[in-house]
Image (tube, rainbow, N blue to C red):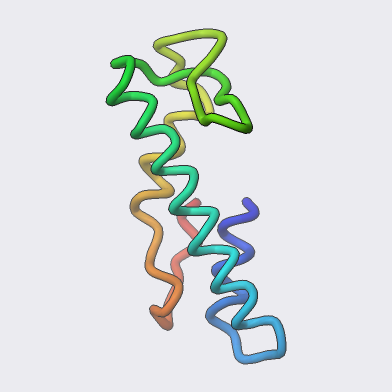
Length: 87
């Protein structure tokens, strides 16, 4: 939800557009990279990820919220002018 709202702000003209674009791009990249890196290292999607190292922890084979990373990967680049609100 936060990514969806940041994208809307990043695509709208206004004083927060630049900051929202920066936050959206960084958060989206970090979420995808954290899940992917842990999957490469362990072969699992995890329930939680350590806030410092990004290492997966707790339940392995977790396809709850972690599966949302696939939707996040499909979200548009923040520089695009349209958004479909699919998240």
